[in-house]
Image (cartoon, rainbow over all chains, first blue to last red; front, side, top):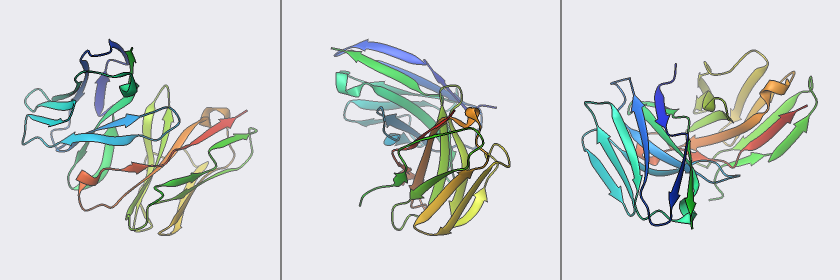
Length: 112
Length: 115
């Protein structure tokens, strides 16, 4: 059973556009939601994370929006750049349990 | 810090052979994780250790897979005998624990091909 469902599987965005990736979860015990960015040939790297006590967190061009009632969260990349082209994974965990459940990944391609 | 170091980067082996993947976590990190990544199944947690002790190995696919962490600076994932369906990228990650805000630090992975 997939604990975290991610969509879309792939995404093409023009330079300067907004990239949006969505994730949904079922386990209401989850209380920590990170996003990881993975470039080809590299391991995933922590990009940004949110806890459910806030509805939005912004770091530079990257924003997480969180909807606790809907059990959904999303990553928005503003002013997308070709250098943002990578695979993005959402994840979820319980704060008292050092184990992440990852989404299936979204391959983002930002066209110049 | 050099980060999480995995070796080898690439491994090609014949079906039935034993394969050993190696990982050196970041010094001071109490948690170590082994993940497998495939196109079909994404990132799957195989096993994780806390202070060198295996905590959860429910993701290990079958008895052909085994993992050890003899000390805080070294872990191995062994597949014996290997099968073509084991072909994947295997990642090791470590975490300082205590707070999830630190996230995981992943190594660059070992791409395993079993022919």
